[in-house]
Amino acid sequence: MNRREKRKIKKEIEIFSDVAKIIKQYFPDLSKKLNELTDTRHQSYVEYQMSVITITRLLGLLCGIKSMRETTEKLDTEETIKNIGNILGIELEEIPHYDTINNVFEQINIEELRKIQKYMVNRLIRSKMFDKYRFKGRYFQIVIDGTSMMKFKKRHCKHCLKRVHNEGKENEYSIYYHYVLEAKLVVGDMVISLDSEFVENEDEDVEKQDCEIKAFYRMAKRIKKEYPKLPIVITGDALYACEPVIKRCKENKWEYIIRLKKDRLKALRRRNRRIGTVRGKK
Image (cartoon, rainbow, N blue to C red; front, side, top):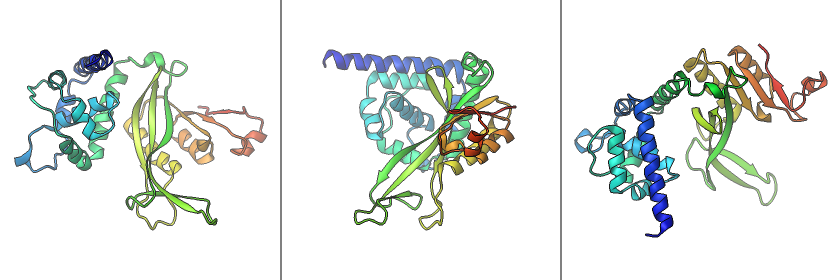
């Protein structure tokens, strides 16, 4: 093992140690809540608790490991196994196989995960550790943005979105993809996931596809319900510079910062409002 590999292992061990301290200090009930996730596995075959499976995957992501296979291959060390056990307060001899992790996450209830996400975000907000990052000393800044997750040349499933390139030409072709909208809480140089909403079709024969704006409406309704009194300023790109989005923000009593392009909100531009940024007023 060369020095670079040793440094990488040392860094990962330090990450696990820091995660363990954060969880014990800020999320004392996390292990319990993870174990309460609905387990669809046949109980006679269950070897690892839900908390072990989810924490193993989480640590893999924190180390930049994207695939399930790499998670178990790279984290399969005595030190890592010991750290996962320490985080959860249990004795652990091995970590789950990547097939086990994959099977669990394929069946996991997304709404139950949302509740755990809310628990963690609320704990951090109530600790007041984010107060110094409030926009203008008052608002929690939420950045809304979408990202493409996977692309395929052929339809992957009935929920795929479809984009046609070179339509009507000889070289016309289609791309099928999956897309997710994220709401990120800005805290200094970091962002923390507040909510996620998949942009997906109900069926492959839909007349009109799902889109990022529709996903924002669904997400906004949920965020308002989950954080009804949180002072929020929504930040979005030019896509969100439209009357329905601004109306939704006003209804929720949210401030907003939206990038303005020449072809968006022309009536607003004619009224000589500020170009480049649109801000809501209370």
